[in-house]
Image: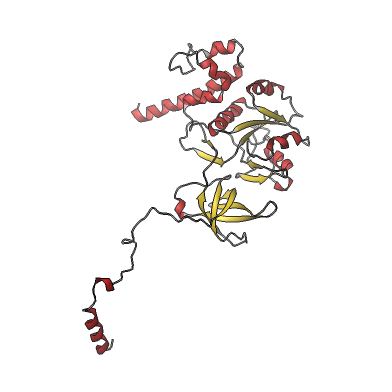
Length: 349
């Protein structure tokens, strides 16, 4: 540096006060704030698919015009999850072009949340979908055989989520639906039976103008049903293993599809089990409305697994079916074993 220039700088520096000095804040000195940008210009959209941290969001411009946008979750959302069915706010590039990437900056309040756990021993609950109004329980009448326990678990989950339930019985050409209908129709559970190539007008009417989520075991014909309702969906179709009697997973992730007549269906991967560990044991009976009234006569703190339980007399009087009580107690037994395991872990016994 030129000596004369250095002298001038040194002389001027002596005349500076604190108002003349500007310090660029670093990470350590930058004040922290909980204030988040309002994003009032965010574009509204519906999450229709989720894949490895990327979200497919449908932005509707008019009744006939809409854009499918790829987005990522903004850091400001923190740990708040985003699932299929969520209504979100987007900023950034919402053009829908192949290389465009928007950001999800807001998740609107949910009207319903369908949850499950992997089994009755797992504490981690998984949100399947948000904002669905109707849970469609897809069950095959044969190949594989229907499982009443699975149906009842779904009914409990639907009640917990505040959703209506619809029982969809597939493969009616292989077996009669009468036995299942005799159990669930008296409970007010709506139902629809279908067979390969059968008429679906009645089912379409039950799904129209609503958001419905389809849940069922692998191999029950759920993907076939989805392809019939939305032909362009092209969901992969699987078959039942002749040895195990179980199907393989053909849908790997949840996908929301718009119905031609209005409304949405959300196809979910086939499940082997539907855990209810997130629901307190005392609340399980609320998913069995035909047993609730009978439980009023039970002794205080009745576990419904004891000999003094009044539900046995309730069933003997014909108020509900033995299958329902057996299914309810099977749920309670699974949860009771889980609670005992947890207590042993805590006490070290």
